[in-house]
Length: 262
Image (cartoon, rainbow, N blue to C red; front, side):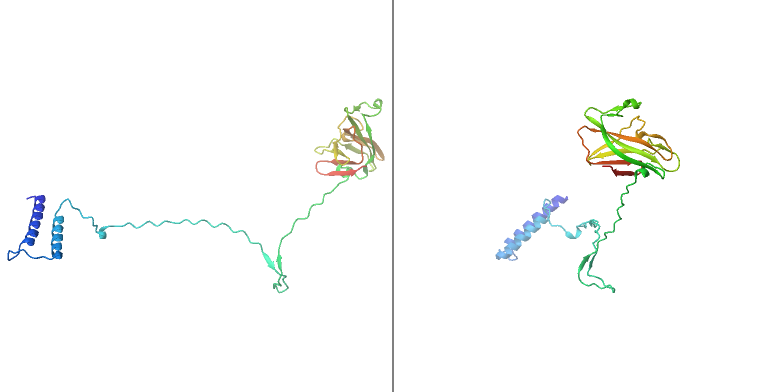
């Protein structure tokens, strides 16, 4: 007998046994069962039938055989603390010789600063590199439409642009150094000179570079001891400008001089 037929036979036998118990007894009389006993017999028969029913599967699970995996620990990443700003040091009160606080709040502030460098205004002679005893003397200004006024006396002359006029500054270069002095205002080696005039405090012009023999900005020659050389600086400005103040600025590659003329 195979396994399936065996289980079926057991179910049939259990059913028959239950029926026999219900309807027969030792004296072949039908026993009188209480409702509770009848319920117990019915539950027993149902349990026996389900036990050998191949299509029945219990839904109960033996929890002792179930392995529940433990959760993996989660590593928490804490944010890096931000650097703290240095606190301002506050000293409360006046401190006596013993170092004790006397009461009032005082903020300690370091106001140590480097002293401002005082601007140095050099003389014209220092900027131009004159020897001791050599000087440049201002002798006034004039307005002209052409220079020189008598072109016959000069091999070269200039005419002002239409609507412009020449502002001519007159100078004398004196040599009282004791020996003859050589001059080169075009620049000796790397040294360069710049001549500027400021008219009425707001009009600035750079001296014209010309081929005139008496042009101070391009003068190159020798002045004997005890002698002087008359020279000029030419600036071209608007014809309508009238002079109320004049300032001459002379610069070389490192220092400068500013002189109020009028």
